[in-house]
Image 1 (cartoon, helix red, strand yellow):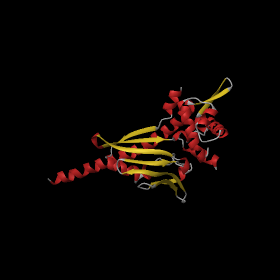
Image 2: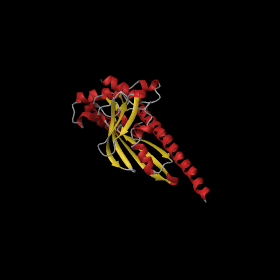
Image 3: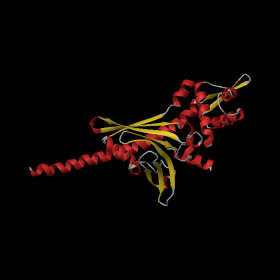
Image 4: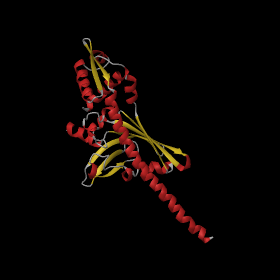
Length: 152
Length: 112
């Protein structure tokens, strides 16, 4: 049971292979994150979110914005190695002091494809404070929001 | 949960992932008071990351696989949905690039 808990507490990993070459995949992922990020479900303001911005370079911020000028910070870039790797703090719906860490790696694959590997560490304390999860939210962001409301 | 306590709670959880412990044992290895550790344990218990069991006169705390699994599954779902969306757009752009290559080449061939 302890072994199982330890295994479950390891970093969360997620991988996907895309048909774009690595430089294009990296640019789409970063410069044009607003064109692919599923912000209707994965955002603090949900349907009201109109854009997601990732500022390039270490210290650059990742945030979502709404048409009426509201903004929710999600994290800050901590490692910037264009077309290969980037890392950032991750705290959507939480104060920056409660940040977790996300790293994304881009590797060349056969046939001009690119493998994108995402590692998320420190997630254990984000999202645990909810009973709503069991009752069937499809995505988790409302849970983060729920916490935000409770904390305010 | 508050920001200041995160580091301590993380440390407590890490210790409990190594071995089940009583409050006193946890407090001995951390720079916080025993009442503070109890407070953090209560929060971790409410979050279902930790569970406890009475053994004789002692209360032993341990990591709770069920609670940790729930949070893990939430983040796995979160990221797989986000990356699926990335792949959909990336592959669409790749197809568009490939088809515009195809429409250009007949023009070149046609001149020959």
